[in-house]
Image (cartoon, rainbow, N blue to C red; front, side):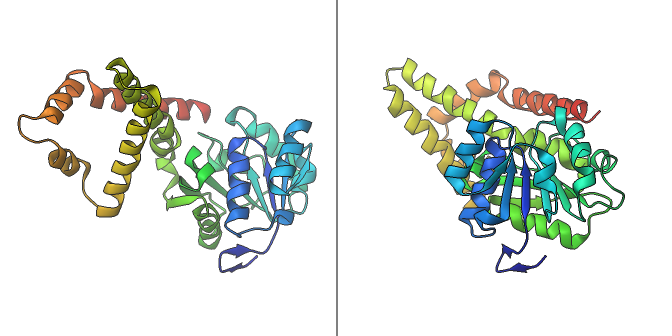
Length: 274
């Protein structure tokens, strides 16, 4: 398998036609990394198979094993609760395929135990903004994965946003921040919008204000390299409205609530892996 201008010459089997499986397929096609004819999706629901084929031009099958047969890359895009069963079901159909898993909490070693000896496994935690190619994907190679294979996976997921390669021991913490993080941010947007409505703003106006403020601030930090604390200081004039608001947020335990949320997500990720 070669990479030429980020176009992959080979076949990709995606096991699971849910939102993230579709986001990955659609993003790779849109970025011209893979052609639709090079992707097969295993999805048990007939209506969903028809939807995926119509939307992206990919071939869809009902079961995992036929999809994995002779594929160069097999992407496990199923829930952690069923990933062991799915991995075992495709083991006899793998022919030196690279296996990628996006199942939260499931280690490379656990997947390797279900697959033929020597199978290369790479663990990835993408997030929902991959749907609009603004995702964040955390990548870790298993014991059999080479540096070249890990870099191939990084190239694939770079089509969906930003990537970072980390040792696998950091995956649970990364899952708690970037994997679950879009829900936290959406909660902040909703909370800000609802507060605006409470004080008389029309709902759509309040939501637009909150959404653009969150998006714009993230872009500001990303492009300027400013530390978040510096942005706070720049906005918060002495004795002004922002200082009053920050004090109220701190009194309400905002930072500790986020810390507790991340800890809870890490604990759950570890539970899924046992």
